Image (cartoon, rainbow, N blue to C red):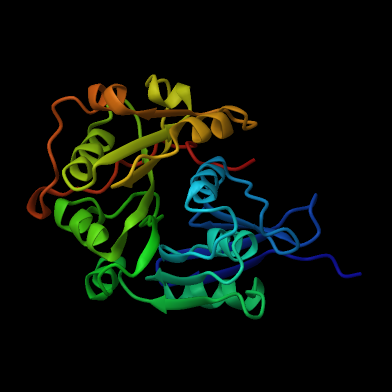
Length: 281
């Protein structure tokens, strides 16, 4: 049998590389300019290798009744890990994926094709522009996992953007975002203040070491108008191989402190990760 070999291609926003996992027969790691972006096992779409992806998966599992099909809008495509997860765990779901990098989408769909009948529509567009054109109350879940290089673009961090997200979600919908920061958390606090101005309920999922300011890392922001399943989420995240904490309520308001919502004219990207923060090997 032929061994899979790495694939390297220049895409719209850098150099993408697909590397086979020697331990899993049809699993691949996607990097862009050396930064890990996605991991996909074509034989096991419910396998979420990255810790932040598992945390997003835990939240997805708590939306509505288990197994109920969802309408999901993904801002940021990568290797389509989470769309595959939703298609496998909630058959019949309708999903739209918005990815600005046409070359990256072409690479992924060529080498890591979606299963037939997955119900996943792919669109090449700017995430905020697509969101602004999306119909009211058209999504159960909106997942933002957009990084320009290793930074969240500024125009996806603002109050106007948060209001668009709220408009597109249904009344019981859930907003999820993969963010990254380190102490003193100016970016993360500003995002909490921004989404608290629009949504009634917030939660933040991150490793204790990140929340204590010991290192740079990912944090998953959850926003909704209805109470979140914080206890169930806390159990799932605490039992993970890389345990995380779920912060919500008064503790999260204390963490947010005096931060204020971000206006378009004041927006900045998330901070540049230190060298090696998201390295591989």
